[in-house]
Image (cartoon, rainbow, N blue to C red; front, top):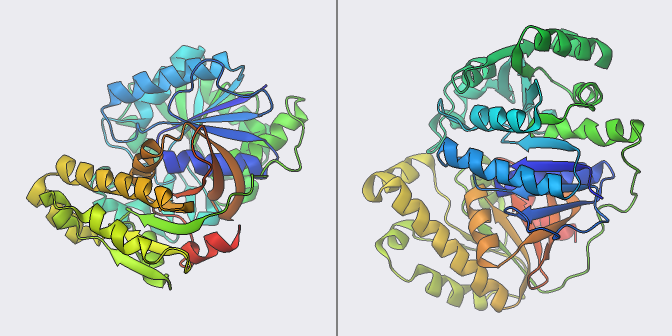
Length: 418
């Protein structure tokens, strides 16, 4: 029976942490939305519930997260994790703080840590400030994110604007002193009424220390990196046995394709590096209501079987902003997501069995369109991005990639892994 239940605020983030748990020897299933009663098999160690709650109103995000918590408790989980982006995507209104408060209340827990660090992907926290590579978060492209612009790198300040409860910090020196020292620091803050604690981390060894220190906590929050130390911590507590083949997936054939909707710098670089057949979709025509998907599928059908193909609706930030100004943020986003969903259905019907999707919102639209209810988690392609196999739908291999993740050759590399 599952011991760890994860509530993720977007689809690619859910796959990200699920892959991390599999690497640690935990057989993991990811559900698309809140699972129905009895839907979780008994032979998994972790269940990751993928929501689309990152950018919706905080009240709705809280309601969805509490529903997920209830389902995970019914599945037997005894530890819980609220997973958000490694760039702490949120606004002054939420949703990270409000959801954290609601989950703490529901679990009758005193405190939770906040650690979106993922050093292998360049996300580190020092004195509570989040860095992306050698830049403060506020100095990166995330400053201009269309939905959740991150203009403050201090996670303590960001979180303090989202909750009425006390927010504290455990600095790197205390983390590197070991799990016992870290645990004592957390307990002292809890005794002082500090409910939310940002924890520094700059290396994978720090994540291991953190995992051991919070192994008994009912609720942990963070990016996928902090999950690195949890499987070992749970094994030391007798809650878990290692599974050597936790990442085994069924063999699924078919043509290979990529759908890219993210406009992040990483995804734009991956599109530029792709060597196969590539069609860039006319997003203005999509917003005008023209049959872009129909024409794109006709193009794709003539290319399938000759190597991976790529269809992209990605563009530079200034072009995205211009499109949103012209048509509105909601209308333009919905139109593009609807087109990507239509493309996914058409590609699978045409024989695609292996599909890479770039972007959280795009991934959500695609899995919904394909009636995927759950995913078994398989081997890692790049840090934070594993292959998965669909459950409850036509057999399909899916790689759901966060826009910011992956090496420049990710789209080509992904298909060599299978």
